[in-house]
Amino acid sequence: MLHPNATARIDEEAIRALPKAEVHVHLEGTFSLLDLLTLAKENGVPLPGPAATLFDISSHDAFDAPEVTTGGGAGAGSAGLSGFLRFLDWQCGLVRTPAQAARVAYAFAARQSASGIRYSDVIVNPTHWNTWRGRELELLDALAAGLDEADQDGLCRVGMAYSLLRSQSPTEAEDAVAALVAASPRRVVALSVDGDEKVTGRTGEKFQGAFAAAAAAGLHRTVHAGESSGPEGVWDAIDLLQAERIDHGVRSIEDPALIERLIADGITLGVCPRSNVTLGIYPSWAEHPLPRLLDAGVAVTLNTDDPAPLGSTLEADWAVAAQQFGFGHAELVGFAGRSIDASFADPDTKAGLRAELAAHAEAVPA
Ligand code: ADE
Ligand code: ZN
Image (cartoon, rainbow, N blue to C red; front, side):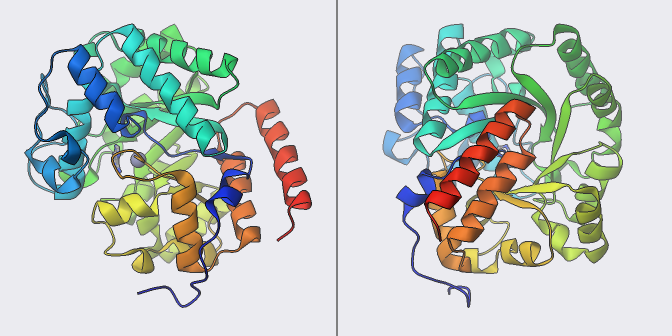
């Protein structure tokens, strides 16, 4: 069933042409099927099932990481998300050398460029990359090398958000941030936390120290919340973790006081409707709260989360949203503008992108 405002499909070419940023996308969710098959062959790792169905979400509950399982937690909770996170463990476990890490980072920047994304924050959760345990800073260095090369080649500029896993202990989180702050690895612009809130319960308090240390060191903060948790996860992200952005945050719609707080504090939500529908947070696009969040006046960006295994691109997701919810060119220019404003890009990059978007909007009127 379509939303009452549904319109004809917007041309993806027009969406690609918009200068924009993406602020909620996981590097772990951008490996193509070809990347995976190549990595598996290079490392002599057998596939867990037929190559053609590796991205089939319904098969992910059967996944175990090749060495250490971390991301999904065990069994209980949102089965779709937990199984999916174990699949990410498996595929990131295939990245074993600095050259392979640089290659997937470079491929990410190329993928973003192909969607007309000019700057991207990318979430990197080292716990998924289980062969790099204890060598997280080396992993970041290898990824930064790939991103540097992409930058030199004129591809999308990328800043990394180092992500804690929701099931880590306070000590693990604080140690990770202390190492990060001491080394100040290039291209790391933010601290993040992701994983399945339904499995772990409320985690705001246990990460308070880690996020405070990140804030004191000048790192930005973005927090997954209000996806598999309700509004309480978003309150904790704001009150306890000093979040500047919320990844997902869609369940904020259930709490009018929280909506007021998001608006008052100028906190942007990094919404990913396809991910929410595919992973079972909402039954369909038509029932997704994106239009209600916009109507309420919340700053919302439109993102992919994990585009490769979800089988999508940013332009495809924007086109579906436009069709479902009746967004025209002006609304899409609005999404592009908010993506730039909400990004953790440096001020010059933001100013340049805003100017390009303004010129584009003038040259291509609605
Ligand atoms: N890591 C990758 N995708 C995620 C999601 N949708 N929620 C929480 N953690 C994630
Ligand atoms: Zn996410």
